[in-house]
Image 1 (spheres, rainbow, N blue to C red):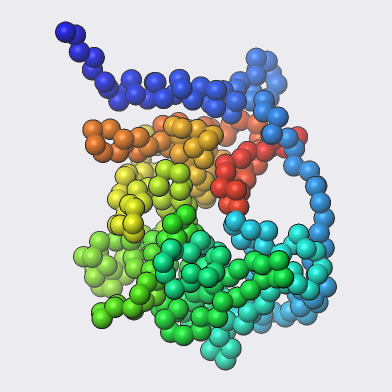
Image 2 (image 1 turned 135 degrees about the vertical axis):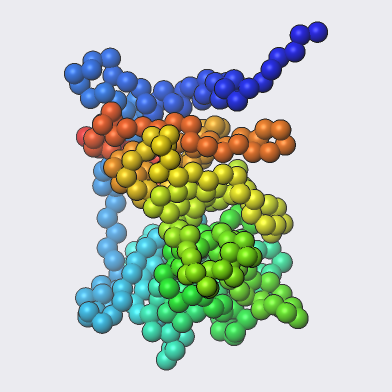
Length: 359
């Protein structure tokens, strides 16, 4: 009986053919090479346009107008909800913008008066089942200049509710340096970048030898963590993203990307592969400025998009083979061959990958 040899090339070819419709819609080439080489073909890729204007509540406008150079102000959007946050020093204001200027649309929390001077970073994640924030819809992570604080947050018909968790059980120490990319998984695990390293914020029942809320480094082995204090080594990571559908977590620095498999039930992360832009065969130029998960409904083959400072884009794939995983960059695009007026937007709220063409 004849046997068929399955090679890496045949698997890739089969997957690319399966996703041909996806690739065609993204990269279709114009028949007239004197015109723009690539043109939008999907109805959803329409020019960005103004849909609705919602004025910032007068209470927040007055607060922002009266700020001085000594006051640290930040703002951003929360995933999962229609909530916008404003930080003014150690004060956090959360606005449910669909309610407009209604006073009930604004929630306020003073993290730790007289101790924390200002808020560095804020993140909203889903809670872990069976832990001590059972009655909260979400877990609010607030990083100040002194510590990492955990609060519960619920968005009720009567307004935004904060679940008071002011004890030491809900506070964790960190490096006091830069904290970026607070992100959570569907099962409630929390990851962030602290001083260039991938860390997990663990909150659980208190044990004999462990604090119930603590930060654990995931990007370094135990030995490397010890050497870190001697050699001042850092992975220099800048961002982390999660693909819940594939149980993948990816991190990036200016020059490399690494992906991990998120094990179930809080297990350790399993490294799937590491890729460097400095590799002679990488095909990408510049430095990496952002990474974006590609939702499984948009491609069953491509799982991650990387964008560089020169406009190059790399598409990564991951599949299981021989009881293991193969993760690598399978396709890259040169910005000189693309429509120059192109904006890539990552919607964290809907966890989808979308490209808009600008006319």
